[in-house]
Length: 270
Image 1 (tube, rainbow, N blue to C red):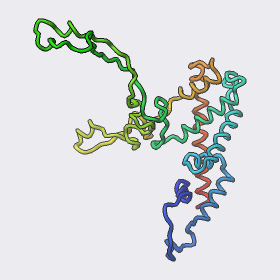
Image 2 (cartoon, one colour; image 1 turned 90 degrees about the vertical axis):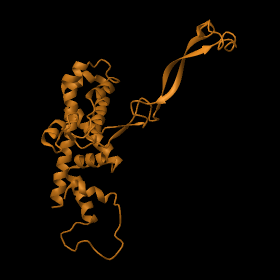
Image 3 (spheres, rainbow, N blue to C red; image 1 turned 180 degrees about the vertical axis):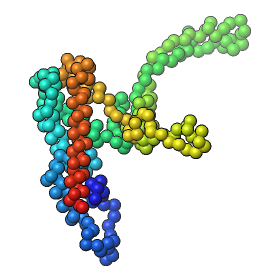
Image 4 (cartoon, helix red, strand yellow; image 1 turned 90 degrees about the horizontal axis):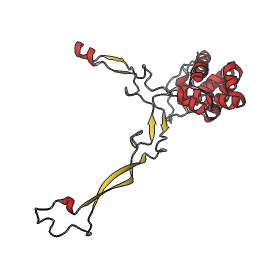
């Protein structure tokens, strides 16, 4: 049994309130067996299971446990160049890297984030310059519409007024949330128009923007900007050469831990 299939036991959508049973085989797995499988997997692959449950949103405590375990691992295996650059803020930097690495590991097409430009309100303000007309006499003279020898500029005065007006946030299109879903709709593939035109039937290809993942990847520069709060002198070149590979390795550690937990879960439920 796959570990993803066991998630439905944490939030069942319905109950069977009758005397009928779906299966009478002695090899079928019930809720007690699934909970035992999760317990056995936790004893053998605690980090991987905690990371998986935190990624699925089942348990907030498991997410915190996975981040803390990842931070401790980062402090143990951090390269010398990273330790030297972090200095006295080494612990804070490793915790921050662990949080970003876990967030990148948990990222999917359904992931959303609060828009920082409008703080989740969907509204913002823009500066608008408008031209307003004024009349020296308080209003247009009575002969303005009757005389042809004068022009509107003879009695009108235009002034530019700068105003701050409310507007819809362009970053989130007024939704207040930014979605990680790619333009392919999270499918990871788009229509190949050229091949479709040649063949005469729909032909799909891997989305070039997300490389088939279905969601956009967070740039590593976001983590770099956050690290700058603790290490202001961390240059982009140093981040790219020393810190970025280590940050990507932490993401791989989360994926490897989940794969290990999945193997143990299948072994227990086999």
